[in-house]
Amino acid sequence: MTNINVFDVLQERGFIKQATHEDEIRELLGNEHVTFYTGYDPTADSLHIGHFLQLMAMAHMQRAGHKPIVLIGGGTTMIGDPTGKTDMRKMLTEEDIKHNSERFKEQISRFLDFGEDMAIMVNNADWLMGLTYIPFLREVGRHFSVNRMLTAECFKSRMEKGLSFLEFNYMLMQSYDFLELFRRYNCTLQLGGDDQWSNIISGADLIRRVEAKPAFGMTFTLLTTSEGKKMGKTEAGAIWLDPEKTSPYEFFQYWRNIDDADVVNCLKLLTFVPMAEVNSLANLEGAEINKAKEVLAFEVTKIVHGEEEASKAKEAARALFEKGGVAGSVPSSELSMGVFESGIAILDLLQEVGLIASKSEGRRLVQQGGVSVEGEKITDINQLITVENFNENTIMIKKGKKVYHQVTIK
Image (tube, rainbow, N blue to C red):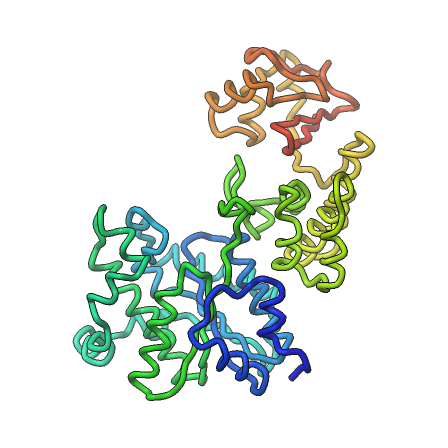
């Protein structure tokens, strides 16, 4: 064990939101090697930056000598977590869930040490899919009060539109996961986002009732802006950890361009930059805050995509914003010369390279002055882009204030 209690580390960096037994958890983490878990339902084929905050917390825990269990929710995803949803989640096929689970495993393996006697990864489909209904109700269901369940925020928010019995079972499933992990691996602590508080305390309570042994839960702050809005959304969609869905350059740029008020919080939560350095960066003001943003962007990109990609993204950003140059890490497309010989309409070009989802979106962008080609603002939605617009076989398209895309003639 390290001399510094990881509970204090997590608290100082702003992770901890709620804990079932704060004093007991702190004492436990300071005196023992604790096996803990966090669950991830594979509802998409990539993790996003909301998941990343939880992975950072697990990494801090592992560095302090505790043993992480990553639980892939292959079984719970068959039901769908109603938390934070106004409507029932889309039902995924077993094939989709299996595919997404494999992608999650691949991504998570980059953030934790899965060596011998280190972190482990399990799938709750291994025990949930084989359950028989009546025995499960007798062992687990009898410990749950429907009246108390209905007071949970995850259910209350759904009562007006309707909550299916399928989703109502989710809390029982997640609680049973904790019980199963306690029995299999002596896992005594569940971690998760604060939106999971009701499910987490139900699991700890189930272990105490069934096994008459102590179990604990702790939740972490959700990744939000200083205004309380969830971070990780852009015009193009979510910020994914998969480089095929969000390129390292786009990922870097997202953090390089966040609001000044959010920089310090993100440095605390999403990097391993020592707190002394974070506090020093927090004192920067005016244009100097850009130094802190660059540190943030580089460190987060390094953790997610590796130091080489982080360096390339940093160089590309500097080339664009400081020297007006073009660098290879900027998202790019190659199109044939024939496309530009007679000219291609700007809206068609934007759609071709994936900068807009529809022509109507493109029209709005152009009309609002949000599209530039080689530094020249486009004002006509019918403007043609021809070979004459190119500079040494390349053009740079700028969408809004922050999105760049390089087009090359092949």
